[in-house]
Length: 468
Ligand code: UD1
Ligand code: MG
Image (cartoon, rainbow, N blue to C red):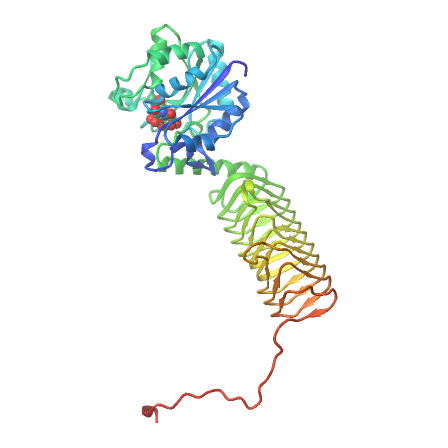
């Protein structure tokens, strides 16, 4: 939007959180509160976005990602009015400024747009307000008998009659930038908290004869602030309920909508079923007909159509630094399987209990059904990798690859010492430690030959006197 500046206040300590972490870095659905606010503002295409930082400024500034964002330091933190005043020199001389609270994370872009439009149309200060059942802790909107906004009164400064008011200030306002700068310069800290309240700009505007407008927020959830661990947990549940609702609208069958956590982007095809207790992080894509069993944790993975992820499976494609993970169509993974970054399973692959796969490609129909480790390996089609067998990929200094050809069969309890190659159709006898190439199509065994010692006697215990 031409001439739009956005200021996000994020300098406060968040005393009521009782945490060493700056409040705006606490996460909602896996993302810092501040990032939710910045992301909501991105579509407005503001000319400038200024984040006011102070408490834990270095960490807050490192975490905030938005195009063209700049920072204004507030030291010490003397209140929300003082916070916006620190950003004022970075704002354009004219145009409109939208002020956002860094601790109101579920704010919707459409609401912000409506508020800015209202401020621009009226050439005046516009406040985002909402009616709540429990207004405790919020600034109350005080209106004249004719309904015009007269002031915002903070909880600490409110009379009993004002405390009874249910319409509250959400922490979001829009105002003509030039006028806002003037009001900020005139703020004083003679209140119960001894702070410069941003909310006092309302009184200053009214004193100038400006009509302050209130724009009603879409709903209460959108504008709830996070000031305590309990409020954060409440908001997380509301966020997740919405995420579950959107999935079900798309036809996803959730065993229990309240027992699901999406901390990222979950995209689902048709006829996807998700059992209770599953957590999805990063970018997860589930193809048509995928079934996810109870208590699975999936992060940064793409799952092909018709695949079943059995209970208690942990898949972690590695986040932003990882290479992701992918599972082909009609595969079966778990229960109790672990797939890590770079796990690439082809169609019809079976990975069973207590099998770990890292940075390995498994061809169509390959199976590792029990107690195995595949690391840095390339496994051909239809290979059977026996129970208890592992690729020894690490020599103490570097990682090496294992290559297994199509249709090879690795017996149980084998160690494939990388770098190593097993030819197509080769069979490795159970219990073998393979450190030289195993030729295609043949049986290779590398273990001590079985022997029976004739006449051998097991030692006997001396008989004690009292047992005689
Ligand atoms: C504020 C409003 C209140 C409103 C509520 C909505 C004021 C005086 N009060 O109260 O009317 O109902 O939000 O959630 O504005 N911050 C700074 N520097 C400071 C103080 C705070 O950057 O010196 C930041 C905080 O990091 C936070 C935001 O401003 O992101 C709001 O501060 P907070 O202390 O939570 O204000 P509330 O008491 O919630
Ligand atoms: Mg707050």
